[in-house]
Structures are given as structure tokens and as C-alpha cells.
Length: 558
Image (cartoon, rainbow, N blue to C red):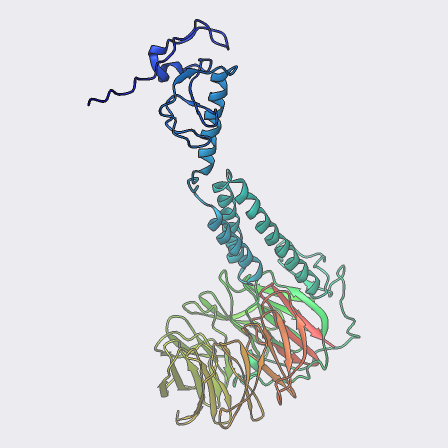
């Protein structure tokens, strides 16, 4: 028996006009043509179950999913049916687009994070001003670039706007904290020549004094780095007994890495500006200045018998202590870090060309020149006729003062940047391998080794060795054995070699000047500078003199 297929649904002939008005497309042109204009008469399949009008091409009801393949195709009786179906189709397409995963735009959040970190580094980390400026500019550029990358992403812009607002608030809070914690002191407003980059705060007419010193006068002497040729950090003192106040501060015009020397009531200090200054120690008045270098000057001056000795650039100079007039000079391959040691009529300096020099203190004649393995960054120490120093190659040398003859040399486990400290017949030298060694001056034999080291020289207080170590701690070690007695955790990296005056250890940790009890390591008092302290403090007649990266030489006292 042959089954006849059901007849194809008949399409009614379109009327001449449609409910919207206008000319109709003929039915023979099919859907694609008819739908070119939204005013066509809709042909639909009405669902026999729910009466929903579906498009003529639908096989199942979009409302109830009933099979409508057998339903006839008829013209819709709904007014404006074509426009209604078109709107429904557009709404469905819009819903499909909203459910489609949006392609991820090129993000800028990472750039904003990196830029924010660089901005925080420029504010929090106390680096050289050029480094801080570059970090700040780089951070701003990266943040702006990140914002540009997400400029069309509203939610991301709102999110990162909150993050940047918190960052800005934190920065303002940090700056405010620094301003409130900065030491008191007037700014330099005295009349100074145009070539003068700085002056004393609280000392000259027209400036504000921060502490009435009652006519006190600094009478003692600290003639060279860390007190004398032994460089063991023992200073005359006495130190302030309680939290000191700012007596005065002097603007040198550049970061101060040079430790001051004092003789006859005058402080001599150099700075990154290239000047050597002579300053009245009692009130901070500038007496004279001399340009010693166009390069960074880290050399600490020495003052002996009315002569100031200092290295600068490619020369080593001897100047009159009263006037600054030059007495003699010696060409040296970059002596900007060559802190001199004066003893026995000789000036001993190092250079960054791999030599140590012995120079006649009176005439400037070079008596000897000794080659070294590596570069000597520390200051040579002198005990009697022995000159002791180390190099960045990790070699410790012992030479004769008068001739430069080698007595012995010892290779150590790490680079040596500190100046050796000498007491009697014992040399104390820290290394970059985190070790401190006690070595016999005559034989070079090792007495003990402690697992503490760094780039700063040690100070000796009786039977105690005080060291600012590379791990950030300040340690008290037994002089005889090297055993640890105490540790003071300052919370900041100490870049200042400690000094000792009576019953007080004084050192810098970050921007804080600390006074510690040598018996226990407990803090006695502190003073906040406005930037990192890298100079070794000088303690004399109730004052502490020190320099900072902010360019000021500070004088604090009770």
C-alpha cells in the first residue's frame, strides 16, 4: 500500500497592502527578501497547543516546545506583526550577545601595580635624589600608561581608581609623618655669596637658633676619621646624657658621606658638592670653604699640626687649617674616597688604581707606593710603625710605615671595605663574608673568627667590640673570644661605623642616631635626622656631630 505524503502547507497570497502601509514584497521572494523591510506581513505557524505565533521556519514552538511542523503557515492577524517580530528578534540577538563571553581587552592593571610600587619606592626608600627622581618619574609614566590601557573598561577604571586613591593617601600620610618627625631648625636665610651653596642654621644673623648654648665652646680634638690612626672609634666625649636637641645644622649643598674632623674649635667636613668646609664647632658659622673636587667627595679630612689633609678627584691636598690656602698637592688616580691617616710625619692614603701611598706630611713628597691585590676602599690604620689595610679582593696587608715594605699579607674569605680597628696588638677586621676576625698585629695569626661582618669598622669599648653588621643588627662581642654578648635590633640598616665615648656607644641606623649602653646594648636615647646617616659620629664636649644624606651637618647636644 502506497502512502501519500501530506500536502505542503499552502502559503496565502499576500495582500496588496500591509498593516503598516506601503508596498509589500511578494510571497514568492521568500523570507530573505521580505525581511529587508520591517513593515512586511508576517507569516507564522500558530502553535495548536498554546496559540503562540512562531516564525514560519520554526519547527518547535519557542514558548512551549510543542511540535509545530504540521501546523499551517498563515499570515498573522496581529497589528504591526512584522515590527513586533522584528523587535522580538532584536531582543533575542541582544540577549545572545550579553551571554557571549567578552573578549578580554588588553589589561593595564599590571602596569599600574608596577608603577605604584615604583612610586612607593621613591617615597619610602631613602636613596640618592637622582635615583628617587627616576623612580618617581618611572612610576608616574607606568601608572598613566596603565590607565590609558583600561580607559574603556569602566569597572576596571573604578577598581584601580580606588587603589590609586589609597596609594595617594598613604603617600600623603608618609610625607606628613616625615615632616612631623623632622628635627627642628631654621632654614638658611643669611646673606651669603652667590657661589655659596649653604650655610649654618641657627648660627648666622637672620637665622633661627634652635638651642641656646650659653656661650659653650668646643675645646677638644678629634683630628681624623674614627678618632685617630688606630681607627678603633674611641672618642674623647663626653656624650649627651639624655635625648639631645638640635644645636645647629649646616647645609653643605650635597650629601654628606665624610666624617668630620675637629681641631681648635673648628669642624672640617666635605660633601658631595665638592667643597671642604671649615665651620665654627660651637655655633655652626662658616669660616671658609675650598673646592677640592668636581667629583663626589667621600674622603674624611684629617687635621694635624695646623694642616688639613683631604683627597678630592684626582689630587690629594694639604691646606692651611686657618685659611684654607693650599700648601701642596699630589696627583692621585681618583682619591675622592681616600681618607688620610696621619702618623709619624707620614700621610698614608689609598687610591682606586690599586696602590697605597706614603707621603711626607710636611713637603708632600711621595716616599713610597705599594701595589695591592684589588682596590682599597677603607682607610689604612697605623699602629707604631705598622700600616694595616684590606682590599676588595679580600687581602689584609701589613706594611712598614717608613718604607712601605711588606711585613705580611693574609687572604681572607670576603672583601674588606672597612678600616681595621687596632687595640694594642690586636687587629679587628670585618669582611663581606659576614665574618669578623681578630688577628695578631705582629704575626698575622688569627685569634678568633665571629660569624658577624659587614662594611663598617668596629669600635672597641674596654673588652667589648661593637659592630654594625650587614644583617642590620648592632652587636656587642667579647674582645678576647669573639663570643656574642648582646644584639640590638634597630629595625633599620646601619651604614654608620659606631663610636664609643665613656659608657656610651653611638652609631647611626637609617636616619636615627642611637646611643646604646655598652654593657647590655639597651638604648639610652635617640635623635632623628631627615635622611640616612652614613658618617661615623664624632662625640666631643657634650656634642655629637654627624652628617646625613640630606646634605646637613648636624650638631646635637643636651
